[in-house]
Image (cartoon, rainbow, N blue to C red; front, side, top):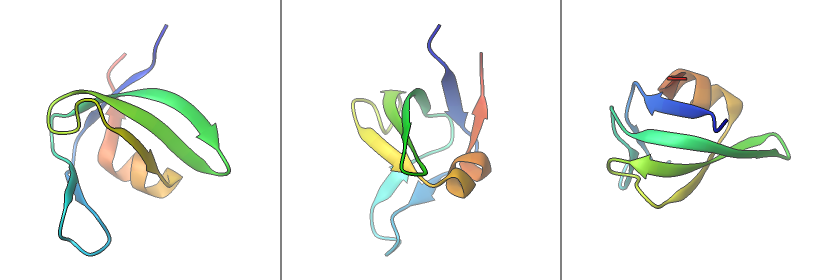
Length: 66
């Protein structure tokens, strides 16, 4: 079963210029490598993007939906 997560708080890049994810986006877990969490956007603003987050960013901005 694929683990899905919903964005609960939007996130911009480190320069606050580009939006990375917005509230309501859905991502699926891909892998955990070198301390980063890799996901793929499957719904919303981040659809089709492969993204990575630090564990702290991930727990702050996402909740499990399955």
